Amino acid sequence: MDTDIGRKLDKGNEYLGEIKGDTSALPDMKKGIENLNVKFDSSLIEQKGYNQEMREHNQWMKEHLIKMDEYNKEHNQRLEKILEKLAEKFGKDKVDDNV
Image 1: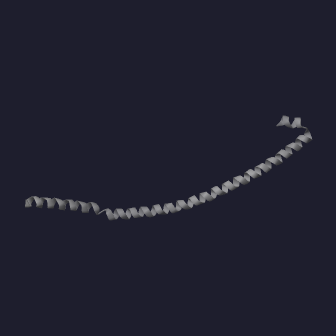
Image 2: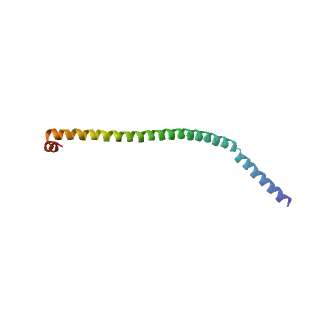
Image 3: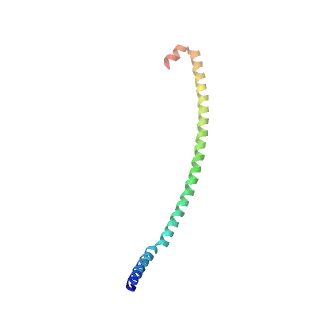
């Protein structure tokens, strides 16, 4: 019976040695994960800045589009007035034929 216990203790010590060997890489793995977290956090900060720039740009584009729509309406109205004056001056039939 003592032999059986001794054999089991020897086997247990072998397992502990293997576990110790397997876990010896954990500090290096932890350092690597911490480095990845720092890089990831840096990327997140950069992405947040980029997202803010894009929101500002999109807002500018929206405002610019509204201004361009207003300008185009005014421009089209001026063109319509010119066409009306041409129609009055040269006769409606001649203008319609050329359009």
